Amino acid sequence: MFKNILVPVDGSEQSIKSAKVAVELAVKHEGKVHLLHTIRPSEYTFTGIDIIHIIEKSAAEIIQNVSAQIKEAAEAGNVEITSEIVLGNPASIIIERSKQGYDSIVIANRGLSGITEIMLGSVSNVVSHHAHCPVLLLR
Ligand SMILES: Nc1ncnc2c1ncn2[C@@H]1O[C@H](COP(=O)(O)OP(=O)(O)OP(=O)(O)O)[C@@H](O)[C@H]1O
Ligand SMILES: [Mg+2]
Image (cartoon, rainbow, N blue to C red; front, side):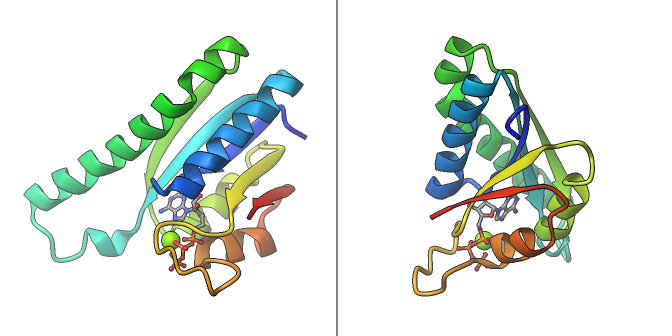
């Protein structure tokens, strides 16, 4: 179940925690970890080319930051880390990716918005209901 793990990341502390847990699991199961960051198309709407560069730069920074925080553990445990940035609705993209041979998704219940009263965020809610592979939901 933990040979090929998909970890959606939005830059939140919770998503960094998810990546760390995924690496731990991958170390134990001789697996690998794929980080996925999604940029919402709405962030692109009515924006000029400069803004698009800023959005892409911040997306790249999110991936770099998460990667940096798991690098040591991944290298020590011989876990391959790959990543991608995709334009689209985060939940839809994650559901699509879940059909592509991942054997699990590790995701936290909350992300960037940080509202703790609600049990699940919009992305974790849809993913936990509709993913095509097992989902490890971290609270
Ligand atoms: N744009 C995104 N790309 C990749 N993963 C994401 C993205 N947004 C959220 N996630 C993942 O989903 C997890 C839960 O975040 P979610 O967005 O569901 O909750 P939230 O931000 O607290 O609430 P909201 O529904 O208001 O956004 C995050 O920790 C992250 O792993
Ligand atoms: Mg969110």
